[in-house]
Length: 333
Image 1 (cartoon, one colour):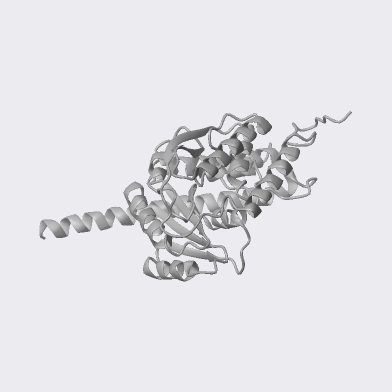
Image 2 (cartoon, rainbow, N blue to C red; image 1 turned 60 degrees about the horizontal axis):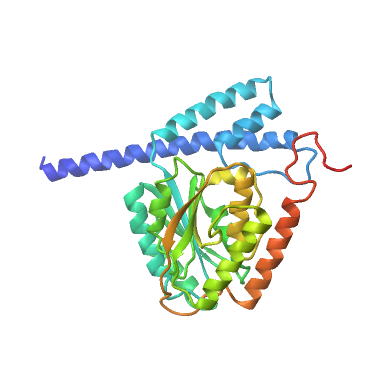
């Protein structure tokens, strides 16, 4: 057999092994999370809403609380050990998504740069495009990309514009893998910065970017400076630039926090609540780039109004006497 054929056979065999290994991990994880989710009915019986469990690590905590002395606890403990062992020897699974609204000039470029970057990082990945009811051809181009790269690209369509935060939540819900990367669809951020973020995944569960070199108007730079200064004061956070449109995080971060913002405050709410829950949050320096066409919508009057409303609402929530209290404790006199 020619050497080239032997090489291809070996590569194909390696690829099949990776796929089989990934299927085993996902199968074990699905079984564990399914049993865990049913156990939440017992653990959360007194709560108004049911929690959603995303990771095996969180699953075993719930099982332990629900069945502290039962065989179910031992069964899940053994299964989570298996899942963790398999994951350590498997390629990292990465879900990359970006929302689009009036971004027809950049949809293809962002998607294809992401595909190129992901191929170099892992063999398990996907790209999700969230069309937030865009009135231009963004959704049509996204569908063309999904046909062209049918095995790794998917599209989520909103019938009407639901807002930035809602678009990001749709992307998160559609994501299937443990590491989730997101970036704005207007081309102001380079998806290759996510490669640097993912290199830090053994140290942080959430990595955000801070814009040390901004290609913005003086007005927008001033608004960004004031906004971040106000956030540091209101929420007592150390973040330099908390609301950039590029971040990577492990989906287990969502086990303990609920994101409710539909405005550009989404990223700040995620970072602030993750910090308060003790999750390690990392920052890396990034640059911004000119949009190919059109005008950004983050600093429109309506978005500023919605962001301020979400910011004040989340502050009231976090600093209330009922937020994330230890079991059996109250702050009310």
